[in-house]
Every structure is written in C-alpha cells, then in structure tokens.
Image (cartoon, rainbow, N blue to C red; front, side):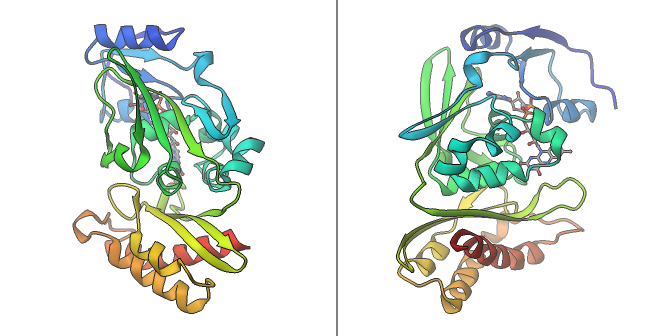
Length: 284
Ligand SMILES: Cc1cc2nc3c(=O)[nH]c(=O)nc-3n(C[C@H](O)[C@H](O)[C@H](O)COP(=O)(O)OP(=O)(O)OC[C@H]3O[C@@H](n4cnc5c(N)ncnc54)[C@H](O)[C@@H]3O)c2cc1C
C-alpha cells in the first residue's frame, strides 16, 4: 500500500502548471488526490513527479453569469452546496452531493473527477445530459470540448498530453426539470447505474428530454431512444415504460460493465428502473 517514489512540486498558477507539465513528460497533476493517490498506492498508476495544482486560486471559483462556470478545483461539497448550481443545474448539485462520503466530497474536485473518467463516476453523467463543455488549456492554447466528445473510454478522455482542465461550463437549466438518480455501490457509493434527466416542460407535457446514463457502460452516454420516448408525452406510465425499454436497448452490449456483484444484465435492467426514478424525481 505504499506508492513508488516520486518528486513533488506545487504550482501556483495554471501557466506554471502547464510549463511544468511540458518540461516533465510523465508527470501527473495532483488535485484532491482521491483517485490518483489510491491508484498509486495500489501501483495501478505511477509518476516520477506530482505537480500539485490544489492551491491555484484561479481554478476554485464558481460563477453564474448566463451559464454556470465551475473551476476545475471546486470540490464536490462546494458544488453541491452552491446556490447558483442548485438553481442552474439541480441535477449536478444532486449528483455531487451523492459522491462517496464527506471526506471524498470535501477533497475530490470536479476537474479531477472528469479527468479520471471512472465509468462509475456521477458527475460525468449529468455533464453529458446537460450539454456541458470542458475547458482545457495547454502550451498550445485553450480549447473547449463538449462533454459528449470528452469521455472516450474507460479512464480515457480527449485531454491531450500537457493539457489541464480549467473549468466546466454548464448551460442554464433553471427552466428545466432536472434530476439524477443512482443505484450506488453499497461499499464505495460509486454509481452501479446512474441516470440524469433534464426535461423541458410545457404544462404537464414534456416538450423535449435530455437523458444520460453512467455506470452501466464504459462511458457516460446519451440515450436518444429514451429522449424520443419521453418527448411529446405527459410522462405517464406508458411513456415511462417505453423510455425504460428504450434506454436498455440503447446500451451497447459490447460496452456493458460486468462483474460478479453487478452483472451486465442486472445493470441493464436497473437502467430502466433508475430512468423512471430520475423522471419522477424531476417532475416531483
Ligand atoms: C472511497 C471513495 C469513494 C468515491 N466515491 C465516488 C462516487 O460515489 N462517485 C464519484 O463520482 N466519485 C467517487 N469517488 C471519486 C472521487 O470523486 C474522485 O476521486 C475525485 O473527484 C477525483 O478528484 P481529485 O481532485 O481527487 O483528483 P485526483 O485524484 O487528484 O486526480 C485524478 C486524476 O485527474 C488528473 N487531474 C486532476 N485534476 C486535473 C485537472 N484540473 N486537469 C487535468 N487533469 C487533472 C490527475 O492527474 C489524475 O490523473 C470516490 C473516491 C473514493 C476514494
């Protein structure tokens, strides 16, 4: 349970972190350390140099100015408790509030969570459902990546070597009914299956729906079948049953997560159950 030897340096700005990354090819960024350090202790990851970005003030802010902009170093607890997040994207407040336990929520950051791209993470599912954008910066400049294009595979993202996530931007969903519902692993509280929905309502009719699922497959993904099944309905039982069948059909068999505790068939069945729960939570 001890990591291999590594050097440590603390960066005081984003530009300094980028410079350090460009000078040390195999170095890793250290934010809250709640994914990287356990992986290093288990020898699943190693790095000759850790660049600690945890005290860079410019990465800690949460602002709401037309869109919600969350600095990469905002912790899950700060996001869950933030009034602007609760107003602009209640599903993200709900999801970050359900991450792990108090210690993980107080140290783990949204940027670290997104960069780590664990398929059982909660926030990526909401970010995919809510059309969020991941802002990154490297020595070649800054770029913006849609959340739907960011998560590529298990622990694999569109982040390129030398790039750092600076912020996560979420459109204003205050006029939508949004929710996140998850079946949590009883030990770690990671998502076995997590479903995020954002519903655009007109009275009791669902004008359009945005649905994403995580935990079930290698990455958080949209379910266009469920979105179509919900749109134009009053979200009655028939619509929910059709959407539950559609989300199961949308899960690619070759990408389903499968283990002895939660087999692929079980995760598939639960995706329909948790979709219904998310919709019901969204419309109250
Ligand atoms: C017991 C336990 C339970 C957990 N339960 C849950 C859960 O229920 N749901 C859930 O979603 N997560 C869960 N987590 C994971 C937790 O949310 C993540 O560990 C945390 O959010 C990652 O953020 P961090 O700041 O700790 O990242 P770190 O561990 O510091 O870094 C993780 C990775 O991201 C990279 N990185 C960090 N910041 C940046 C950046 N700004 N730009 C680019 N790369 C960066 C690092 O180099 C590293 O590769 C759990 C973790 C633990 C230990």
